[in-house]
Amino acid sequence: MPENKLPYSKIAGVAGLLASVACAWQLWWLVMWGVWGAPPNPLHPVALLGALTLFVSSIVLLSTGRRKAVVVALIGVIPLWVF
Image: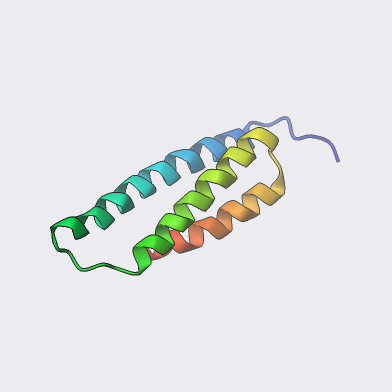
């Protein structure tokens, strides 16, 4: 199969990296509110796992540009919807 010369996979990889870092930072901030007595939300660790999955798949997408990385990134976005 010929390699795609268009930069769409690179743009998607950078956007995924930025989104995963932004979501993980905000989720970590929400989880740390537990230090001051906020009740724990069991969906926050699930969303953090989704952000980690999106981060790793974005790095794989940037390095290889394969369709499998895009599918894993879409699966990683699903837990972020609860956030």
